[in-house]
Every structure is written in structure tokens, then in C-alpha cells.
Amino acid sequence: MKDFLSVIDRRASVRAYTPETITPEQVECLLRAAMAAPSSKNRQPWHFVVVSHSAARQALSEQLPYARMLNEAPLSVVVCGDTDVHTGEAAISWVMDCSAAAENLLLAAAALELGAVWTGVYPYRERMDAVRKALALPENIVPLNVIAIGHPAKPPAPKDKWQPERVHYERW
Amino acid sequence: MKDFLSVIDRRASVRAYTPETITPEQVECLLRAAMAAPSSKNRQPWHFVVVSHSAARQALSEQLPYARMLNEAPLSVVVCGDTDVHTGEAAISWVMDCSAAAENLLLAAAALELGAVWTGVYPYRERMDAVRKALALPENIVPLNVIAIGHPAKPPAPKDKWQPERVHYERW
Image (cartoon, rainbow over all chains, first blue to last red; front, side, top):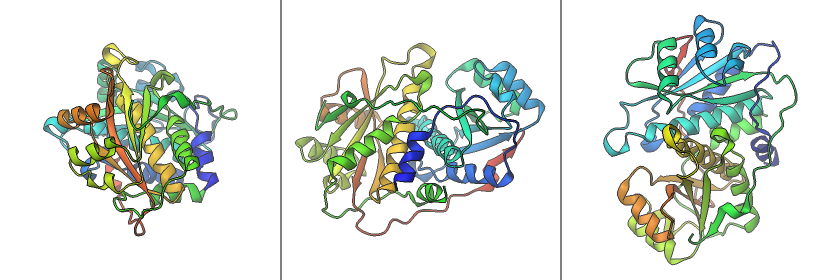
């Protein structure tokens, strides 16, 4: 299981890619990992838009800040939440569920020796509107992020983020 | 890397545990995995309260719904967000960051052959108040969830959640 933990350690945000494409098998592997995430009441409020070569890619790349790499990435996955699934006080729960799914996808990419990066869309109104328009999302579907994926142009450089002072015992 | 993906597949919500304790090395491993998660602008707005045997455990077990297993779990980790870290339009970003950290922790538990379950706290006002009081959390620290962890009383039973109809190509 050391291997598994090394994948978690090795995951890093990768923003530059080689032109090599992602195979359909790899895409399915990434999406299967995403959908294996836990979700509140197991309601799985997620959808995934796979963008590879369309006008949508161009639009996302141009209209999202910090997202020019999308135009170089052979693949992007837009993780979306269905806001009709959790209602009332629980309405925001799609954010946790879709974040867990997105993290699974990032880890699966690292396991496949691909590089990926989470580009934030939610909660920024302008970015959400841009993605919604580019992908023709229905009203109840909110984009959480755009994950760019490709073969890393150079070896990923993970950060050491261990901060023991963030751990508290028994109480604050 | 098949091993890694099998851990993602194998992760399941485990709510019954043997009395065997979790070692300090395992605790550190879980928390290191959690802190290896990505976060918006790499701001790492997370804190972790490790609860094992205190009055806090009793209070959490009694006051949270669906959380009686906390009193049997040898360890619980309360994942918290610091709401001072992301501000303005980005304020809610601690939820994504802490959810990714929580998912890493759940996966690391599965990799260590431990069983764990995400018990929701945020966004439920009553649950948040109960946890805040039990752990003496400062005003700016919000509890996202309580993760109960132990050695599984029986083999975990992962669900197959693959739904190809949740995948859209190029646009909705």
C-alpha cells in the first residue's frame, strides 16, 4: 500500500503537456474513479463533460482566467453538480460530493502517470456563466471546475504541505 | 498502478469496527494524505481535530445524527475549514479544499486496510453548532465532517456506481 500513498504524495498540479493524446481507456478509467467517490446519502449528484477538440475547448481556454493550458491539454473534464439532487438545508452538498469526485479523478490521473490540474469555476459567477454557455449546460447543472489532463511536459513537482500544527488533539 | 485504482474502487463507507486501535503512525499517514490535497490558490485552509477517547467523542456520538458509530470507532478525525482564508466571492472555497482533503484521508484509510466513513456536519446548522461546542472551535473554524475510522468488523462492500450516462462529450 506504500504505492498508493506515494500516488497521493506524487499528485501535483500539472499545467504543461506533451501533444500525446489520452486513450478512451484512460478516459473511462478517470471517470470510473471519479464516480467511485462517496456522496451525501449516496445521491451522486455529478455529471462530467469531456472536452477534447471542440469549439468549447477554445471558448473555455479564452474565457476562463488561469486556463490557457486548456487549449494545449489533449483532454479536459468539466465536473458539474446537479443542484436538483440535494435540496433545502442540504442544497450545497453537491459541492462536497463533486469535490470528492474531482479529487478521485486527479489521483487516478497521477496513478496513470498523467498530469492534471483543477481550474476553479464555482463559485465565481463570471466563470460559471462562461462555462455554462460554452457547454450549453441546463439551469440546474453547475460547473465546479475544469480539470485539464495530459502527459506531463516535465516531471511533476509535488509540494510538501505537511503542517503538524494543523492537527489538534481531542479539542481545539 | 492497478493497485492504486483498486484502492479507489475498494473504498466504501465502513460503519462497524473491531476494538483494535489505530497506531500513531497510521494517524500521521492519514493526516499527511489529507494535507497532500490540492487547494484553491494553494491556501490549505484546513485543520484536523483527532478525537479518540475524550468527552468530545461521547458528545459527538450523542449529538450528531447517524453518528452513533463514533463511540465505537477507535479514532475520529473532524475536518475543519478556516473561513478567514478565502474571502469575498471565493469565501466558499474552503468547502472544496476540505472535501478534497477528506477524500484523500478516506482513500488513505482504505489503502491501510482501515474502514472509514464521512459523517456530514456542514451545512447543517444544528450539527455544526454541536461539533463547534464539543471541540471548542473558534468562530472562524467550521467543521465539514467527522470521519470515523477503525479496523472493519467485516469486509467492506463497495458499491458499483459507474453510470456512463453521466458522461457528456464536448457539450451537454
